[in-house]
Image 1 (cartoon, rainbow, N blue to C red):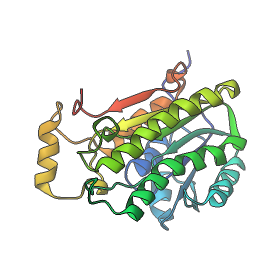
Image 2: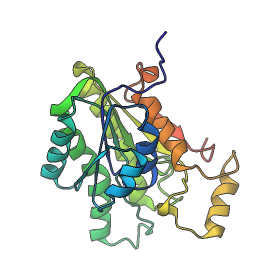
Image 3: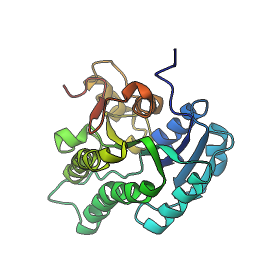
Image 4: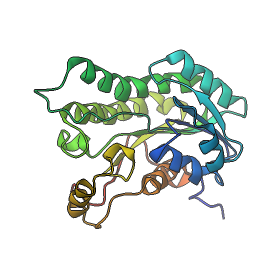
Length: 243
């Protein structure tokens, strides 16, 4: 009997895999995919290589389609791309009435157009039955209020809508598109203020923050044959912080 929880033995690409949830996914995928390519801005290839020996690292900007196209072409040298994860994004805590226009535009562009650009760059290289996973947030349902303000929440709500539209459009190619919606996760995005952490822990029904690995495991599930009947879905991984 095949292991339906294992990820495809193909070529995986993580856009934003040099830190946080993305890096956790790189590490967890090390024994489950044949090849890994990480696309990100900072030069953190040694850290990526430690998580997944043999992983390729390519500098890419989600707002630069050419750099993404080069990154996916590099990944495809190892075979058709079977798995894509896009955790790249930024937060924006500013209140709606105080947010600067340039900051709002940057947040919306990176979080929404970054995902659009990634899907477009990936499309020519996707294997049949490939799985794309985007990254939303619990803030998509609440209009912010956790680690980001209303503009951040709106950007993540747009990611959920994009997931559904992309799933519909790519279905004839047998490509699935889903997304995860993490709750508060112990990454650099929420800072290191213990009082803030305690507040989030108090809101969580499971009594702790998510680890990056908690979220990464859900991504690998959506990559795996075990989720083969899921597309256009949102997987809430929030510890009951929102019911």
